[in-house]
Each structure stands twice: as C-alpha cells, then as structure tokens.
Length: 191
Image 1 (cartoon, helix red, strand yellow):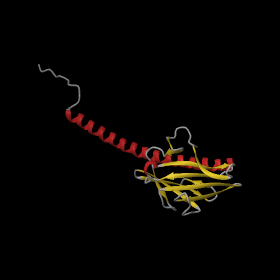
Image 2: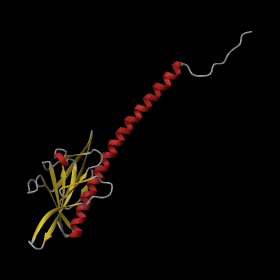
Image 3: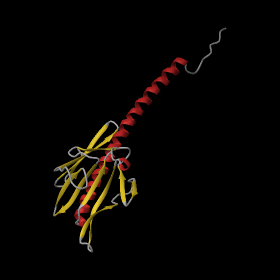
C-alpha cells in the first residue's frame, strides 16, 4: 500500500515570482513617493514666499513705512536661497530714514542671524532660481504704503536698477519649477 504524503508550502518558483512582484510594487511606490515629495516641497516653498510677501505688504500698511523683501538666489553665495525683511526706520536726531533689517519670520521657518540680518531659508531644498523680469543674484521687492494701494518694485541691486510693474520670483525643486508673482498694486499670485 502506497502512502500519499501531502506537502504544504510553496515551490521555489512560486516564491521567486512573489518576491519579483513585490519588488516591482515597492519600486513603483518609491518613485511615486519621491515625485509627491518633490511636489510637496515646491508647493510648501511657494506658499512660504507668498506668505512672506503678504507679511511685508501688511507690515508696510500697518506701520506706514516702506518694507523690502530681499531674495537671495541660488548664486548668492553664503546666503543662497534665503530672503530677509528690511524696513524703513526714522532717526529723529538726524532727521533721516534708514533701511534696517528686521526679523519677520514665523515659527517653523529656518532662520540664520548674521550681522543683524535674519536670513530665512526657503523650505526643504527648494532653490530661488531668480526673477523673470529682473536679472541679478539679489531680487529686492519694495512695499511702500500709499493709501490702499502698494508700489511694488523689483531691483537687482540696493541702489536701484531694473524695474518692472510685475515681479515674478521663480523657484526650483530638482525637476519642478514654480513661481510667485506680485504686481504694482500688490496682488500676489501663485499660478
């Protein structure tokens, strides 16, 4: 009498097929996560720059003084991919106005302080690629209170330079790009 033995388990071929399928699924998931992560980093940086522009615009109106946002592009050396707030301060003794750095960062932003300047880092490895309308490693956007309208000016150097009715700041995250624009009346758009 012959006994039949029942064998439980998987064959080597079946295990190889399952492991191959799992490898493919994991690699697809990793690529998807990487793409989603890049998009989230860029969107976060765009929202950060938009919020900074709104803070400068509102501060200029509330304090009734000129504010500047100085953006340092990827080619700016030590302060690359950062921005800082600067505002006009009145000296009654000398009867003069002086542009002075001020920290307008909010919690969660990475800030480095050097020489009285508070440089705010753009989020998660996103780079400031430059400005569409204005060349230079520094893009300066001026916010001057004038009733209910804003005078916005972009400049490639502190003493003046190229100006535009609209300033479009371009951000870059590996293979993705985005931009934040502000026009002469203070309307901020993130297309």
